[in-house]
Length: 153
Image: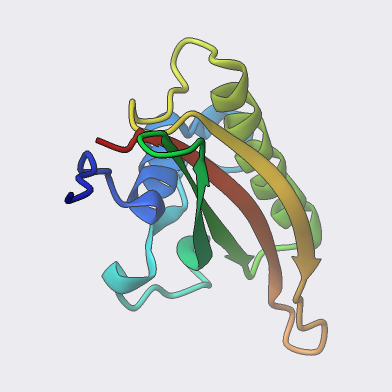
């Protein structure tokens, strides 16, 4: 008996599209530009002096079979959201606050912020400060978890 699954969207593209589609330029003081948001494999050279950068990449994923026989496959992908700016630490905090706001909105199911239909939930896990104070380069890496449920047929 063969197991078949529905085709899921890529979790990294789902998270970067969520951020890109719901970014509100007016929420960050002192700027009218949107940061460069994308997946790591779409990485182009971006001058940090002119633009802030947000990149998403997958760290790990796993599958849990729930039930016996024909059941449900719970897929969990851990995605890192890498935010960097050359402007200031307060600018980095503003970028972080906007990302957290979008993810919380998606989790709550607010209008305007929606996950792709394939994914049931997204939640924040941890944040790491990787700033280089000597070079005045400010960077956070925020980990989140995106969950899907698939019926095993």
